Image 1 (cartoon, rainbow, N blue to C red):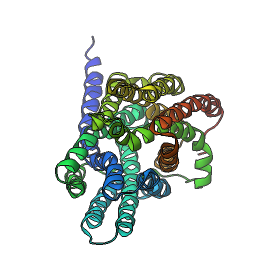
Image 2 (image 1 turned 135 degrees about the vertical axis):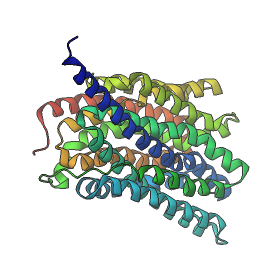
Image 3 (image 1 turned 180 degrees about the vertical axis):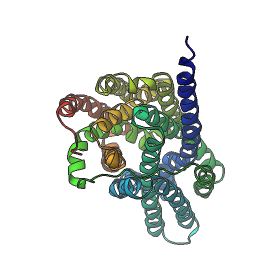
Length: 405
């Protein structure tokens, strides 16, 4: 090795170390904030069904309302992140989480009718969805500005690990708080954790928005929607598990209801840890093809489960299948998007998954009401397989098209 080789190696090592020192606090802050989104996920259905005595349709409405708000505010959040400040969007999202928690407290303690309590709860879900939109869009745009497009796969993988790691930890944490103290304890968690995240993120440097022409939102949507449709069809499986698995376990008189989501999240994170690097090295569309097949198998296991062990295995397999789809598609999408609109493009892309949550939660609530809980899992498996077909056409489209700079 020559003397001239050493500065290059040191520079690369120093660059990687600097990148990690920036990325890790950003991801930790996202993890803590996202706990406030995942912890209520298993609790809201139980609170609406058992405490407010409303049926599965209204359970779906309560769950889906958050995702409706997220969908509607994604373009707004993306524009703030792209054109004003990604850091501001992230911090604004965390502040909105505090407000959502306060509204949940009001819903719990207010001496009003069940109808009014439910309406206040829905308001909290709307604010929660708005907060998630800003938090995720701001985080992704901020992260891309800090680590660069060549590390997009790493950023998306770490982001997914933070979000679904929070899911794995948040579901049992939320259920424990709910069972031990009541719904108000979950609301207090939603208020407290974003304060820690705000303290972490405030010390990370802001990035300067990219200059350039911003195409109309319509043009961005025309480019993104095929990628988003695949993501939405994949997201049906998680929507069904997140909304109905706790109620399904309770109906079957099985223990470990919270651990179904935990196992889903752990499998999700494990695949990201050991295989996440593939998203920067292997065709994203190829990863998506095999991932959707695995997801469908996991959902089918939930459908046929006669014992809790099979149901938990189905949650594990489903989580493994879902793991790489978002970053794999995201990397392929970013390749055709100019730097100045990547936040908007990723916001629209992420919104497509939220659409799946928003639409399918109440629809599948009706399916569960009339056909039983197992039926929602086989329907979700069919959606995953349909996503595999759409993925083929999306790959052909991406090879021929990109957003004009």
